[in-house]
Image (cartoon, one colour):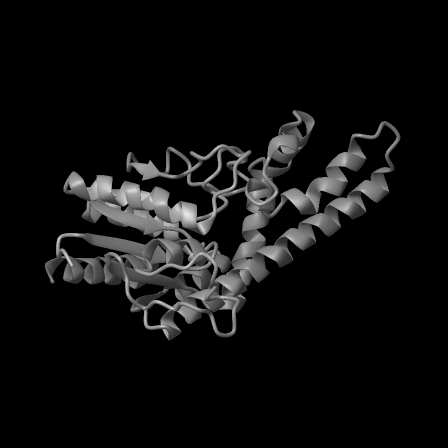
Length: 291
C-alpha cells in the first residue's frame, strides 16, 4: 500500500456533529484537504433544509464533493458511489491533498472502502454475507463520533423543531406545489425523512375546504413521526458502525455525549467541544499522518 495514499473517514449517527468536526479539522488544522460527502440523501440536489446539508457559509471555503451534486431524478447505488467517490479520492490525492470522507451512510462507506466489495451481498442485513472484507483499498484513519443514544435522541427531536423554524415545511410545500416531487427517484431523494411523513398534511391543506383542526392533528402526527424515524435512523446507523467494528475496522471513538448534554441544558459548549472532540481528533489524525 502506498503510504502517502491516506484517507480520513469521519463517521457517526445522524446529528452527532460529523460535519462540524470535519470543518474544524479541514479549515483549522489540515487545510490542504477536501471533503467527500458520504451521506446518501445529501448526494442529491434540492431540499437543503430537509436533508440538513451544511450551508455554503458553514463550509468556510473548504471544497466539498458529492454534496447536492447528483440530479434528484437519479438514484445512486453503493456500487456506483464506490466508483464516483474513488475518482474524487484519486483526484484529490493526485494534487497532494488529503481526502476526508464525511457522512452517516455506512453502507456507502463500506462500499467505497472495502477492498473486495460484493454489491450482491449485504454485510449489514445478511446473517452470513458472502463477502465480509476487513481489508481496505485505502490507508484509512477512522474517527467515530459517538453520542449516547438517549441524549442524541433528545437532541434529534430538538433539531427537527429547529429545521422547521428554518423553513423545512415551506421548502417541502414548494417541492410538492412545483411538481418537483413527481420527478424524484423513489430510491433516492424521495427517501429523505420528512417527505413521506408530511405528504398527507401538505396535500390535505391544498384542498379549498380543509378542516383546520384535522390539519393540525395531521401536522402534529407527522412531526412526531419525523422525530421517531430520525431516532430510529440513528439507532440503525450505530448498529451498522458496531458491525464494521466487529469485522475488524479500527474505528477510533470520540465521545461527544457531554457536549450534547450541555447543549440540551442550555450551557455553552465551545470549550467542551474543543476538549472532548476537536483536540483528540487532531491528535489521532496527526499521529496517522506521521506513521
